[in-house]
Figure 1 (tube, protein in one colour):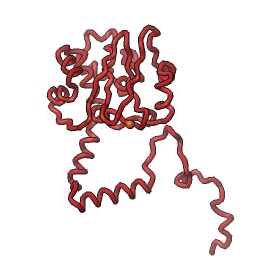
Figure 2 (tube, protein in one colour):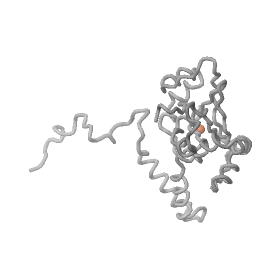
Figure 3 (spheres, protein in one colour):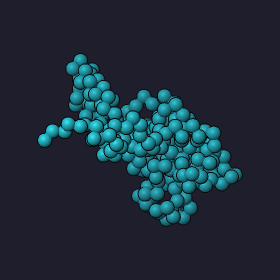
Figure 4 (cartoon, protein in one colour):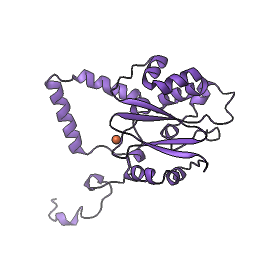
Length: 224
Ligand code: FE
């Protein structure tokens, strides 16, 4: 039983075979293309073979990257809300202060800048060139952060972009967009919401979302 007429088969759009598509939705998280995978593997093996980095070092680095999640950023923000001395130190020397306070060894040539929101000023972060992001505190950026839509529109009309995120900033509050560079990463220190005076640091941590530290959201008691 041979298939003598291949034209009868597989001529239509078979949605089980998404690898046939040469494009994908802008906002979807997706696996890297296989060419990238091959390149990554070849480079990794070459670096190992030439003694530049070892497989163990690469594995350790992956573990470190995986340990960075927005929970770490939330800890930093909640402490800044409750400890004025820490907050001043954080604004003056962010990474040094975070390493010392939380017994971490975040080791990067990048500069971290903490942008403090006030009732008069709302900060938000973008990388207009690519996708630079404070990974040392927030981990992997969300897909929308890397999208052309966000990167191009947030600098033109930040207030409209915020509204699309469901975030209303009073018209009397200035909105400032910080554009990341190759050397600098920004973390937004959001305003502590009203109605949290009696909360513990751990309770406050739970209010601090990833988006609040990018500046596309504001923490609130109602949201949780
Ligand atoms: Fe970038």
